[in-house]
Image 1 (cartoon, rainbow, N blue to C red):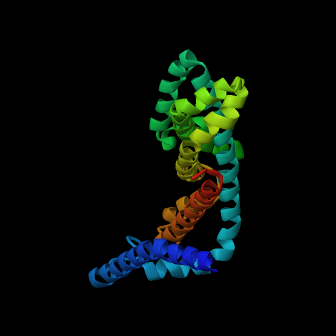
Image 2: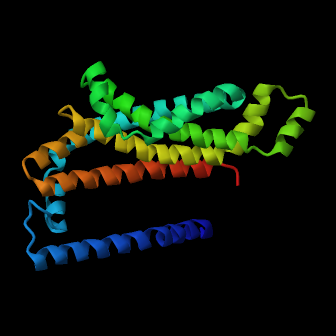
Length: 254
């Protein structure tokens, strides 16, 4: 009972500061828009945005499903690919030296500049969205996982070697356990990058997903509707990040 109460108190203490700050910023935003009499097409008031947020829920739900499905599939592929590349680069230093500049370069490329080229090659279907998400997200997983593998405690490795453990056993029981915090850091950061990549691909082409809705609304100067879609994106991104954080708490040894 006491543990449950402490968990609830910790949850409240973690949640109320950002909630209060967001409420303050929304109130300030609403006040400035009303005092300055800013036109709704230029900058919508929070009250207008949340009104459209509620009104358009039924129409937006299918697009939320499409966007989130793409994000989850793309993120899963990015994590798998990122971890495999991290293992390979750490196992073969020469190959790692060759792949590292490419991985870093992919992190620096804005996806909005790459998506049109991908669409010329693969069309405007789901494959482009998934490829964009993977390219955007897997380098973060690779770099963080590789950092974790390379910084594994030497004492643990020596202990495994003294017990005559083979390479796979050393990886399974030592390297991966020591690297878990870095791996989850990469996964959390890649979830953010996956959201960015997925929305960018949807805004660039296609007529499905939250990104396409934003482009559609902006094209008709429907600022409240466009900003309400951005609220959906922010909420979905926070949920995905929180889910990975909860898994991390269960998986990582304290």
